[in-house]
Length: 269
Image (cartoon, rainbow, N blue to C red):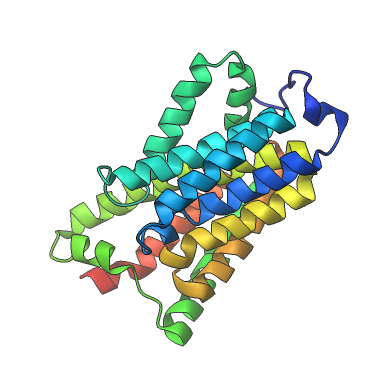
């Protein structure tokens, strides 16, 4: 599945679609707000109602890309709302698996699979990975010492008192799964859909904003954390566009999450 996949002829092949671009961008931003919605009772229902309207508009626009983005976001809100999957990224993983199941049953299966392409490794990837670790460590130090950055309390409560080997295993598992889930959603489904209706520049910027919004209640957390994550999402989006696949941004994301875990591990002991 490496390299750009051939898309079936549809409205996107004819050029930018303003209505589809608005719908797809709105769905992407709502996807970023999925964890924030949990902090405000009633907002999940309101978001699902808005997504139902967006689905009608997506169908009316004739854009399969807009439909893909809205479906992914509806699945996200649904898995978070049922509150049976536990802490993030498990609800996101459930949503991605549900999307993959739908893709396999869809007559547009090849189109859906296109957002999980590995892409091609580029010569600069090792340097980007090194830069990822250095920049992540530096940004996290700034976040910790200037803005008193800490892990969300729910994660701290889950980790405190656990043996070191279990924390290390959990950190490794989190890094691998979280990176896979967030890359599949933001650089996979959403960026791919946005590129098809509005071009790469808008796609990279919008998915980065959505990724930043997700981190208002993530790590790094708060408004400062959201700005940092948004900038990081921009770099990951550029890597996704440059390599035409998810492998490079996934590896970089794992490296960043592992660096964050190693630096925050002492606070859990």
